[in-house]
Image (tube, rainbow, N blue to C red; front, side, top):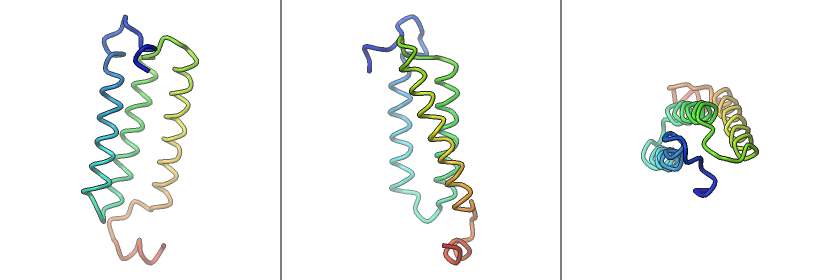
Length: 101
């Protein structure tokens, strides 16, 4: 993955750092923010949106197919996060979330 990064862009060099930050943020949310699924869903959605904007703006890989594949992956993840947001209801009331399912 590092061999395919563009070397002419400083932002492209931050691609791996951004991916690792994203993983750590999601790990932190899963481990330490329990009982507040709405915060997890909103954070997941915002991180996916930020990642999609980063990929669209920077295009960090030399291979165009790799860029398009990563953009498609982030787009699908964003759609799934919106779906999870509608299923979860993004409600702060735990009794209502439990009664709905």
